[in-house]
Length: 166
Image 1 (tube, rainbow, N blue to C red):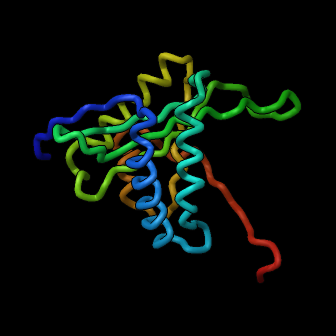
Image 2 (image 1 turned 30 degrees about the vertical axis):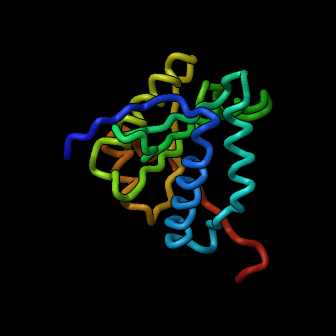
Image 3 (image 1 turned 90 degrees about the vertical axis):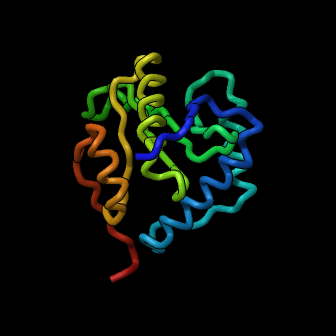
């Protein structure tokens, strides 16, 4: 791993353009994995999403960015809190969140993802969150390896079926 001057910090409104580019690049990569499951969202919708999350003063969710010495944002992680199951369901309530990590291809292998994940875990722990998950497409072998190296394990299986298709 090359040495890189890296800062991980909470995203601000000025980071929205970088966050949008990261989201759209990630969407293109996922579209190549499974065009039946993924799409490239409209840029305006992504701008609205990040603007709203960053404007939410409750601090329910987090967006952290990784910035290199020259000020370029090369990665981000979203920490999105999950709602606890209703009383009638059998799942045990546990403060949990889902993480979504994106690192630009030219910044991979530099420790950016690890630094983002570590910062997200600190953020979550500081807020009483005790379980993090990462929804990974089974064909995304790099993401499966990345999260596995950081202690994330298979937490079950999600089965689905498209209706009206045989």
